[in-house]
Length: 380
Image (cartoon, rainbow, N blue to C red):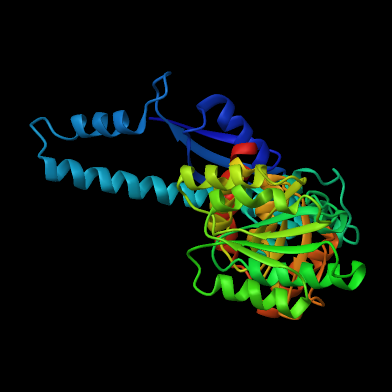
């Protein structure tokens, strides 16, 4: 074991020296603030080559006793080593975060606020890295929110251009409600001529009745097909329509079902824009899974639905930034068509801020240290 003291102008300088001489696996033993900087004691193995965790444990176990070590003792010692490593990593993360908040108070504050919005760690760090080198207290109030909004792509609503719009999404994403809102808005602006409603669904109970009821209510033709193949066989009849709204079945995980749906949409004798519906109330993992399932369908844009049911927009904002998928609509209520509006990135971020304030979201400093300390230390 090699133990050495390092003097640095600040914690970041000391950590840089440690990483340069001892490597990334060095362990911080103690810190002490001096008049002109900090003193940090660090330790590492004397071996020049890095030792893998499993090999390191085996080496410790081999040197623990002259005789044979039982399996139970090996397991116990492995757990103790793992616990000790986790404790040291938490301490290092706390030191790195505390030093960061001292050196970069405005950036640390911005990271805290983005985390309170529910923004994913990798997206929050991207936003902070893009901020100017020098940030004043006044200028820092909205810079990180503006930078987040700039990473959200928006596009013109597809239904405004006519053609065909296929609504894609998971069960409960709000496809039927979105169809009603788009249909009524088109009817108010263009009239009933040239508008057709199509439902492809043989699983959702009441889907056919909903389509017929909506068609009768709006005075427009509506069609229901059991599956993609049946729709593809009849798609030629829609060639003369100005706008065809297509409600599709819930996105399936089976590649065959997705391929059948794509073939059906490709058969429509009109340009078909695929719009994925992402419910704001869903977790990031669910949204990511929907994007994965919809990838073979050449999704052109998305709409954020169920905003009125969400307690945070951080997950959907992170998904939008990470995927680069442009958002066209924001649906934030049950009223038809009032609660449907073209998406605007600053408005989405502002809505996320409102929800965070309404929920009283606050973060413990220790949680922030664990959330960002490791990445800040790695970048030092």
